[in-house]
Each structure stands twice: as C-alpha cells, then as structure tokens.
Amino acid sequence: MVIVGRGVKDSRSGRLARSGLVPQALLFSAVAGSCLWSSESWLFQTNLRRSTAMMATGSISSPGTAVEAVTIEMPEPLDGKVGVAIQAGRRTVSRLAHKDASSVGWRVGDVITEVNGVTVNDNDAVRAAVGSALEAYRNSGQLMRFVVQRRVVPKDTSRGMLRMTPGTGGALTMSMLDLLTSALGEFPVVIFMDGTIKLPESNLAASAIRALMDTGLAFKAVDCVDDRYNPGAREAIEELAGEYALPQLYAGGKRIGNGHKIQELAASGSLAATLRDHGAVEAELSK
Image 1 (cartoon, rainbow, N blue to C red):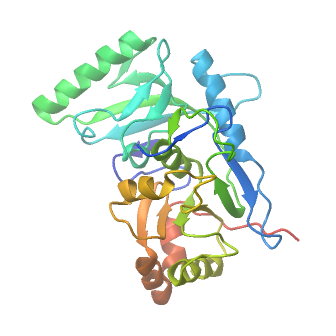
Image 2: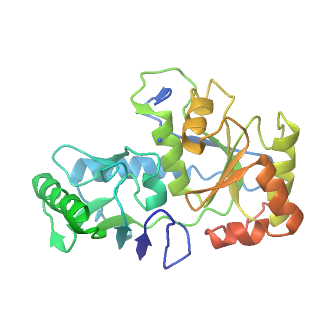
Image 3: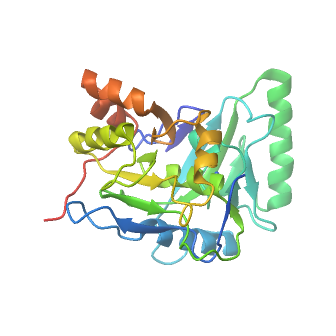
C-alpha cells in the first residue's frame, strides 16, 4: 500500500489530535447510536490497546495480528518536520504531533522500518535518517518516503457515537486533538457535531445526519459539546478544521466541509460518491 502526501491514497480502498487531555487507561469508548443501527464492537478501544502493546515491544508481529507494509510519501514536511512523535527506545509512532499528520498517512502504532530507502533498526537510526531526508528536501525538494509496519484493521461497517473518554475525570495524558486525529485514521467517515445521532442540537446537525443516513454508508459521530465524555473537543475541532462551525465532516482523514457543505453535496446528489471516493463503506444495519 502506498500513501501519498496531503491527499492520502490507499491502493486497497482509496481511504485514506492542545485542548483537554485524556485518561490513558481507557482512551476511547463507543456506544450504539440507536437500536436502528448496528451496535459498536469496541473496535477503537481494542485497537488502541493493541497499539499500546505494539509501542511496548516496538513490533506488531505478535501472534494473531495481521500486519502489512505501508509506504508513506510526503511531498513536503509539516512545518519543517515529519509531524509525529516516536516512543523513546522504539521506532513506533506514539503521537500525531501535527494536525495534518493523519491526512498525510501517519497512524499511531506505525513502526518505522525504512526512511528514503535506508533501513532503520532503532530510534537513533530513525533520527539520523529523518535528518538526512529533511536536508535532502531543503536542498533539492526530494520527496520523503517512509515504510512502516501497520496492523491491518477490519473495516467498520456500523453507525454510532464515539466517546473519547470514559467520563470519569481521571488523570489526563493525551490531548483531545491527538485523539480526534487518531479517530480519523481508524474510521472512514467521522462527523463532529453538536448533539448525538438520535438528538442533534441544531438544524444543521440534524440535516447532516439525515443526509448521511440517506447515503446508506457507515459513519461515526462525536458530540463535541459533551464536556463529560469529550472534554475540549469543541476547541480541538476548531483547531483541526480552522473554523468554529459545527458540524464538520471528515472522510479518509480529510476534511469534507461544514454543515452547509454537507447540504450542498446532498442537494447535488454527490455526497455518497464523495464519501466513497474517500473510502466510505456500506453500513450493515442490525436486524
């Protein structure tokens, strides 16, 4: 699989996180949006536990874990850097340090194995190779190419709400911006809204949910005004999207637009096609 730059290209499917900090023990939880939609499988929470295990070992080749080699090609640095943090002593991405790192192709848990054709076996080698890659870009504009090992994640075909924390107000260790950005890498379609799928809190949110339901596609929603479960999400989305308006729709890690853009795409009959082009999958509804 090859992922290229700010518009992520995934050869399998076309798919393509400063405000409130979040408890480390339970970073994500998921709840069903309604009995009309398929129930959550706790996939995100499970995937994050697996990513934590990967970061502890610097490998994702544990028994029963399917992995693939993924090539990430960056036409240019993110504000002069690669845009990710690497766990001390490992080659594993522990945090997406730039708001555009997800759309470039990076995922938490990626294990870096190669930089611009140079095999890297430890963090010192990664740092040296990245330094050389950044220098080559500055000198000649050379594209930066990374090969990583990545866990193969089953496609999620449900619809439902995502909670970023368990809502217990515990010790906080990870930024909400990091969490929301990671969500964009885990799910093909995510809408950040005011309210829930069942009870939107604005006309635009209600209109957006109706439009998404009409596409027949799977999607996840985050209630950005729920300060118990998603503290700081409102400010994080403003930083991520570049505007205060809700809702904000993302697909394949890329911003599609706000509520007015969703209405425009729905009215033209192109919303479903746009989302499919970014990796959206058909929803499997519960019987």
